Structure formats: C-alpha cells, structure tokens
Image (cartoon, rainbow, N blue to C red; front, side, top):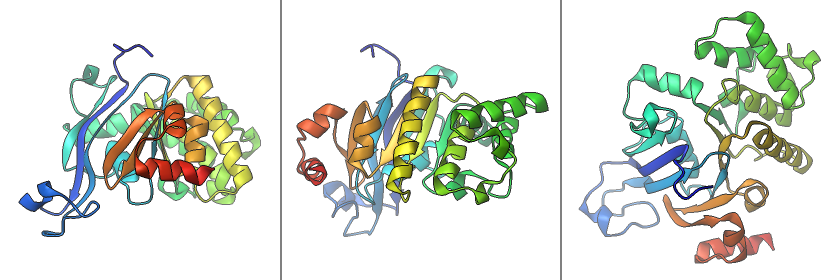
Length: 277
C-alpha cells in the first residue's frame, strides 16, 4: 500500500445520533448517552480509510457502534452527519450520502456489496439462489438472461455451491450455505468494496472456519477491498490487515492487526486481547 494511494473508501466524521442533543453532550457522555437530554450517540465523529485490496477490521463489543457504522455506509439508515466517499463515485469528491435516492440505489447495486449477519436481511428466501444473484444484476441495469445465468453459476461455484443447487431456494440451505449465497450475491456486480457484518456469528465453529476460508479465497480471487465488522478478535486476526477498535461509538485504537494484537495500548483493547489467551 502506497502512502499517497487514494483510498477506495473514505469515511469522515460519521455521526449517528438518536435525540436532539444539547450543550451538555459536548462535556462528556456516560458511555455514549447524555445524562441530561438522553441523546444516544451511536457513532460519534468516526473517520476511516479503506485501501485497494485490503481488509479493514472493525472490532468492538455489542453496542460499540460498529454495525450502525456499517448500516449507515450501506445507506440502510441515514447518518446525522459526516460524509462517505467512494473512489469510483464522482472520483471520490462527493459524499454518497449527499445525493439523490436514484443515485444511492445505483451506488448500492453497482459499487458496494453487503453481507448481513442475518441472511434473511440479504436474501429472498423464497427465490432460487440463482434468482437472488440475478435480482442484484437486474437492479444494476442488465437484462441479458444468458449472461445472468452464467454469472450466477460462476459465483455460486466460487463459493462452493454445486450447480445442481442453483435452482434451490436458500430457505432449504444451512446457515453457512446461506451466507455463501449472500456473498455470491454481494459480488454479483464486481463492487468496489465488500461489507461483511458479523458474517460468522451464530454459525458452528466448523462452519465458521469454512466461511472464513472462503472470504480469504474471495479476496485473493477478486482483489476486492473488504470492510469487516466483528466482535470476535479471532475472526479479525485471521482476515484483517488493519484493525480499528470501537467503544461507545468512538474509535479508541487503530493500527496494523499484528500491532493491535501484540501490543494493545488502550485498556479495553488489552482486555479484548487478553480474552484470546
């Protein structure tokens, strides 16, 4: 990675606030809540960069703000403030949050892929696996049925789902297979960045290992940039090049993953790392 390389994704000063806020909010919060007005600062002035071909991990406990950050980035919820800039959208000069609804749909369908913790949020469980992928391709403007079938077949084989199961609905699949279908759908239009939100949570350990191996394979195969959210440092250690640690809506530590794990500076990060030992 070059120091002067333009990031694939830049997030600047992202804030997600529930409540109006008050002057007392500036003077210190109890965790991420104002004791005077009751406003909750789910994400509080967060900035980060993701570079080409890297995996940036975001780790933190439940309620730390990491999933809210991800849902804001994918425009599932509207942030209170800040900007997000994709290199492939307006040369990274215009925030994807400051544009029309039609442009936002285009960005979601063409430039980003999202894999949710709960596959129900990312898949139509009644559709076939191939149809789930085709839906994403159609949303991006394609109407060529033959190309869609070929693309679905190639992607499902890349995530190790047999061609014979292309016409089966994800509701008949195991949790691990559903996640693999989600990953293939997210990759349908060659996105600039892949967003993975707690993708192994709730899976058996053996299935987790298979999904993690698949993500490493996908990264090597497509050279894609990945933003990876997890509460599990084992997942972060296996996949992330760099890591950000969040607590109470803020970034409290960041650096190369090896540095974070071998020499954590913040007391909370030290506690997280100690739990691995």
